[in-house]
Length: 309
Figure (spheres, one colour):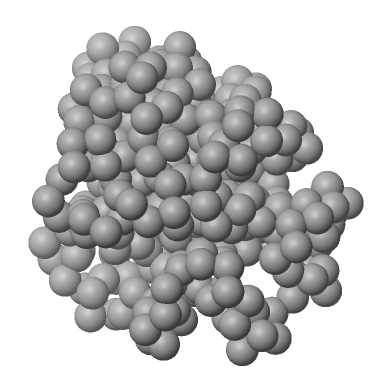
């Protein structure tokens, strides 16, 4: 949607990201946006994968008329279906990655691959009389380079030199962030479908125009988590996939990152990615999960993969 088509200046922009096939979370955010007077909505990548309702999420976003950027998980499903040579061949027969295969086939059968392939890497917003904004799933350099506490000062300096916009908005890390770098404002929108900050609410960003500047407002919205967690079973996803699908569900139940730390640990020890290696990881880290609510506590307890702290 071009800015010139708008009848009045854009005053409020919502950045929504990392829905990851969580339709109940998306619906709650859409309802919240509807009452906040937002003029423009950008879904900043990772609409799909991890959760089982990818095609329903994409369909709802299109119904709402929201713009989208390409996230790494969206692109991963495209690459899976095309057997992209950049993916390790062993993944396609490894039970650990069957959750990715399941999600890829789910959106492919619904006809979404061409839409994903056409998504832009970035969206630039240049409203007259105010600061310029650059939106990208990770950084504009790569969709897996997220704005977060681990991104060095040197990296941010390079990014703003290469892309000298006043406001840079990313997502990807699943943790909201606000950071100032000289005249530049660097923001992370957080995650709608799978936050990693211990708060189970769906989280997104609104930019409000005020005296020529964009003021960030980080919003958190309660949603039907029980329905989101039940969808893993109701769709047949959990029964069909390997360990990774169970870990994605535990991440949703706890609002904590589990899969990537496990993969990094297993890679250092040169182990596989099965349940025996997972149990070794849990024992090595003395890992337990806090249950943020009764719904999450029940899922964690019944998983057999972790103890509730």
